[in-house]
Image 1 (cartoon, rainbow, N blue to C red):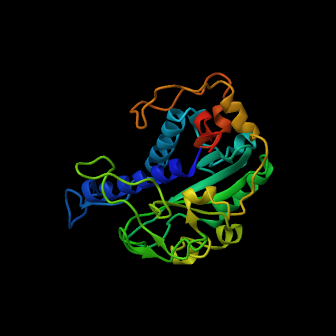
Image 2: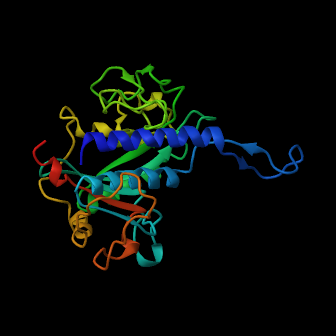
Image 3: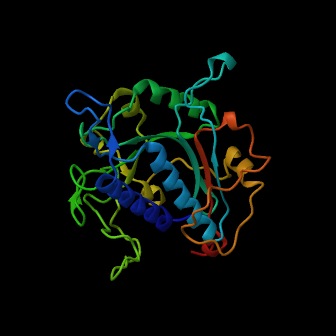
Amino acid sequence: MGYKDFWWASALSRMDTRDAISNIQTRSVPTKQHPTGELVTGVPPEEVTTFNLIRRLVDRRTAAGGRAMALHSRPLEGGDTSKGRPPSGADLEIAVEVTRGRWVDFALQAKKFHPPSGTYRGWNPTQNTHLITWSATNDNRTPGMLLYNIEGPPFAHLQGLSPLFGGCCQPDKKCHGWKWPGSRGHEWSLPDERTPMAVSLVLDQNLMTTLTNPTPTDLQEVAFPLECIFCPKRKLTTRSQTPGWAAALLEPSQPTDDVPLEPSSAPEDPGPNAGDLNDQAGFSVVLGIGLEEEDD
């Protein structure tokens, strides 16, 4: 799994959000002022963005000859007091082989940027504390926040620079890509140092447990673009073996040939060895380096 796969998935996610804001409206609850309900626009639900992001990562991984498994199940997020199961606070588990034989193992809570308030609404210290505790007691995964952004203020306009994402080694990041790749008369160049800016990560546990509904500026010095998990300058916690939960998901899966980059089919059936669905987070994903990439 490589930088380019995450870069492209993030870029397409940004345009998904852009088009949803432009083209999709939701009817609100009727009021005296608006008897039939007011039509409002907004960013897609976190679950939709997460599903599309993971689908694209898995599609590209399979097409490149790597093994990938996506599992959608009932979440551990809220816990189950009747069974003595603590809440995980996680929306997503993702294990990524960032270099040959070195894996990152994240447990993440997803939050979308809310333009009217200018915040990542729903960022909650109590929920994040559950996430940190659950990560520590479940194979010591790395807890973090997966943030979905928009184009334009407070982020950079297309081709514009932004000081946000100060956790990246680039002092100013440039927003790249303005038309869907392959559209008439328009092709994107290969991914480069410019970032789609659509998805970012925060791994600072102090801010996770002290901030409520932070703004992007509050996170300016610690957030970094998702694709930067592959940057050698980042000192991420990695492990030399495939995380146990990821190995269990990989076991029944096999590489698949001739798979298009953007199939419309749903994620693969995890198979009988995937484990108890009640013991998984909302999404569980494994992404390893493919055969074609071994010598890169």
